[in-house]
Length: 261
Ligand code: PGA
Image (tube, rainbow, N blue to C red; front, top):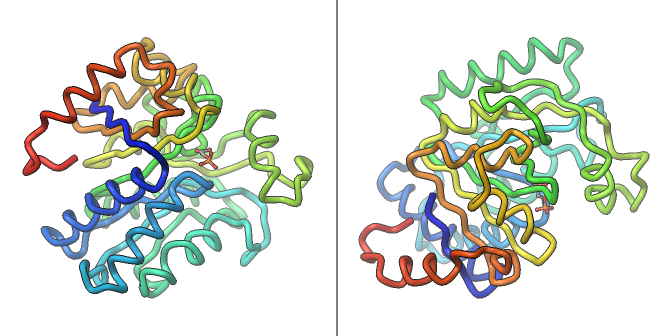
């Protein structure tokens, strides 16, 4: 995988927004897989600024969700559907029709998971998948020991993830749903270009295990080692435990500009 070390979260957001802009110029109706959480927000802000300034035309872009809580009422402000509508779809000026995600309120969750995998395939597959990383190494909501071949399915959150996400639920871990639907690791690996952004010291251990540790389901993000075109963008703090940081810096510094990410 390619590791790019940037000074801070804003620079990471700008770099990835540039990559999305470049994809949209080549493929205006690209299917963009978006992640939730705090980390990707600078990407969406930078991309929305490009749309507003006319630097990028995102009007034909399509957007799909990575994961979703199970059991939140439809329209709950912290359901990931609501978050993506608020943080991505509206700022980019897209319509809800260009956006798809798994149905976390479905009565038959299993059927909803299978339907979502099918919908992604029928849409031609995900062109660029944005990812965050959990402090426990999860991507999407694939918690430690998720099958590396997994498809979209229901998962149970670890206590650590529920504690991490309590900040979106008035600081109350009990309000964080226990169950989620997430694209599987196998599903994520089918995207044409997964880009993981990690910022802050709290992610340094998970990043080091992902990039320099062995491929292991106990660190789900390490599955990106299997992808022929995976990019990991990290700020200095999240890169602080990488033994090969200097090599990654030198490699990126001498990369031909035309290659992009
Ligand atoms: P965060 O979440 O960006 O809010 O830290 C990342 C994740 O859980 O994937």
